[in-house]
Amino acid sequence: MKRRFAWPIGYILFFGLFSCSRGADGTPDFLFYHRYNGYVTVTGGRPQDIAAAGMQGYFYPGLDALYYRLFAALNDHPLILEFLLGLPYALAAWMVWRIGRKVLPDDWPGREALAGAFALFGMTGAAGFATIGTTMSEVVPSLPMLAALAIWVEHRGNWRWLGAVGALAGLSVALKLTLLPSFVALLVVVVLPDVRRPIAALRAALMFGGTGLAAALVVAGPWLLHNWQLTGNPIFPNFNDVFCSDLVDHGRWSDDRFKPHGFWRVLFYPAVWAFHPSNAAIELNTQDPRILMALVAAVALVVRRGANTAGRLLALFMLLAYVLWEYQFSILRYLMVQEALSGVLVLAAVAAWVPRRFAMPAGIALVVIAGTAAATTRYPWWGRASRADAAIVMHVPSIPQDALVLLLDPWPYAYIVPSLPPSVTVVGTNGNLVRPGVNGTLQQKIEQTVRDWKGPIWGFESRQSFPGSADKILAHYQLQRETPCADITSNVDASPHTACQLQRVP
Image (cartoon, rainbow, N blue to C red):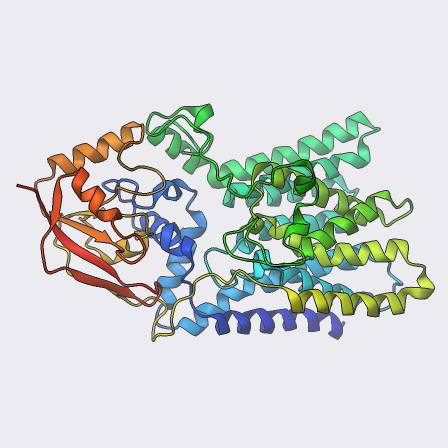
């Protein structure tokens, strides 16, 4: 019994302290929209802003509101904040450990220790571990999905638990729509054991799907309705080719930069970043064999007759979710759930194929392989805040009340908005949603707002990162800088930015 508590306690200490070692959040998504969306939600909204956080400003803000409150409460205690932000990883590891204990035979030598160690292996992969302690992490929205998997593995076959499993899986989808492939994959493996009994299969599908849909609508339904009423698209601007909101172009608005092309690349996509650094599936160079190992293990489990049933179904979940992910996203960070399961899937495959008398040497070999994989992993470490007396330290020039602030280039400035007077109107003029020349009434609204503004106008720009970009926007709106300008500095952003008061060209 004491040994069972050793792993959870170890996870808490490891992930909490490691989060502290990395520093406070300074990731791109924190700058782009997480702080802004949380601020807007907690303070009751900023209806005067236009595209201040680009397309991400329309994402579901439930988690961002929680993060904002947490940062506000613990801003003067950054180490406590960082430790707490590492704890979701410990909870996720504990869930994966419980799953691992169920997919290994009860009498497998070293079962508890192997499940604990390989849960840690999965939770330290490049997709999830690189964002520990940040609002950019996929672990937090994935927690309900991992809980659903843990409950399903433990109570598989008992339909009375399907309501809880479905509700938890639906909650993950509500928190982040990128978890929809995992939801669909889990629905399939929940129904599959009863496929020869149509009534039982239908009951399982309705129980899981109904509770999942209900949970998703309870949590995110009000926000989807708000988006529908505001924009004409509940998931604006995504799938605007379907919903056809006139605010922006009637396009799909999806990020397809990382999708593989060609039969062999599609088939062996994880091998691209398994053995050498690559930015094929993520913006920063990454090397990690975990997903490739998990897929190979999953195939081995599916084809092995007589293997642990829970392990085979978990393997099928892995394969289905992966295929849907590659079709829809192909962005490595969104494989967090599958990466977390990578270690225990490898364990389950070895237990299915290796005779029991060779279990001990096989376990030792696996530890060596996993250690080598971990040692050669190259993480896409995202930006972190520099050390300071507070988690967020911001120095912004004095912007007058009721001013108009134009974001003049694509740099993510939305994180600055909470430090501005509440009456200021912030407009993104050159981002990923609107800019001069694009279609839609949102751009027309920006044009009219700038043209008709009677009060002071300021512009934020990052001359080092986007030289000349602000000049084009100023020329378009017939504005020019007044000198002197002032710097915007913070510990969450490595580069200082420039704030200039603007005036109309005579």
